[in-house]
Amino acid sequence: MTHHAYAYLVLALVSFLVNIPCGYIRENHPKFSLKWFLWIHASIPLIVYLRITFGTSPWFIPVCIPLAIAGQVSGSRRRKKTMSPQEKDHLRQIPPIDFACKEKIDEAKTAVVLLNMGGPRTNADVRDFQRRLFSDPLLIRFPLACLLQGLFAWLLVTFRAKTVMKRYQLIGGGSPVFESTRCQAQALREELLRRGRRMDVTLAFNYSPPFPEEVMRSLQQAGKDTALLLSLYPHYSKATTGSSVHYLKEAAKKIYPDAGFKETPPYYLHDGYIQAFADRVHEQIKLGESLDDFYLLFSAHGLPLYFLTEGDLYPFQISQTVARILGKLNRSKDWTISYQSAVGPLQWLKPSTEDMIEALIRRGFKKLLIVPVSFVTDHIETSCEIDIEYRHFARKLGAGDFRMSRAVDCHPGFIRALADSVEAAL
Image 1 (tube, helix red, strand yellow):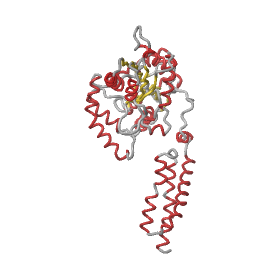
Image 2 (cartoon, one colour; image 1 turned 90 degrees about the vertical axis):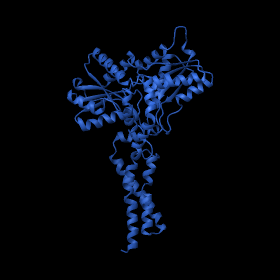
Image 3 (cartoon, helix red, strand yellow; image 1 turned 30 degrees about the horizontal axis):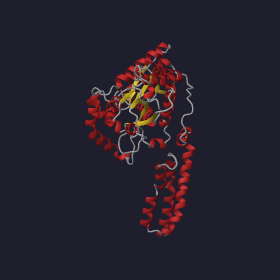
Image 4 (cartoon, rainbow, N blue to C red; image 1 turned 90 degrees about the horizontal axis):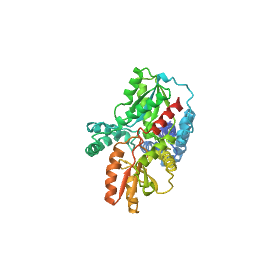
């Protein structure tokens, strides 16, 4: 075989063989997504480079194209054969349709683990908390994040830390999340005990103590072989509940590989949870006033738009919760949903709460009642962002009355919703 013929053979084989793994990897991503397109075209630079290096005729390119397609198809079919039904459902953006827990759980060896993001207990903890938060690739994603995530986190912490510390100082010098969540854990423990279930209830935070590693060590030492995972994010997102479950299971692989996990069913439509919101809203209405005088703005934590392209359920569950609350309040007009706390230049869910406040006041609504619909405890996003910063913003624009309902916290209806979720899993 001549050198020239050898070059054509190598180029043909590379066009086919390189595309087998590319097609395999492509099948892991939703059709027409950015990563899907990337892996379709990943081999092109290499093929072009080899063609130029070998000096083969550009007329050979039409031969390389079907070979590349054949490699893509081959890799794709291999991946489909090894793909589990759950992975297929994920790619098709099919949400969990039901909740089934077939294995019987030994309550004596089970601990309920409340999942949350956490927060800095003091101002001295702010930098570490933010560094962990912004370094999390499951929460913050952008092009070349695998290379630049650390730099991105460092820049955000460097330029935002002092400002964020001042904000925490306005609400007492740290986040109340730990104490609030500990109170919720105690209330849930007592409610389960009242129902005849003597169960441990503990906490696991992603970005502040107690970290997943600490929790798994404590479960191992206590002889608990099953963690019953109960998210304090009522509305599911891969950024919140998904990442909390992921990191707890990753910690278990390293520390307690024999541990089992059970997830609890969602409670975002539970009547007790909905009633808790309705009661918190009514708490803001004084004697002689009417709720009808106030425009209701349901403010949820924002979410980057790229999560929606992956089938994230978050905004749809938020809207379902709001619909149920409005039913409890017998309200059919003068309300809307907005999103707050966006960070960075990426596109987030719209409209923003700040923009909605401005638009409402401009349209003549001078009495606003903000309902922090996605938060179960009051912390910097409610006590500072809404109750201080948005309040000042609204009054500057001419709002006559600006109020915020408290988070559900330890409301008996919310604790009942958590307990019912635990019992449904048991």
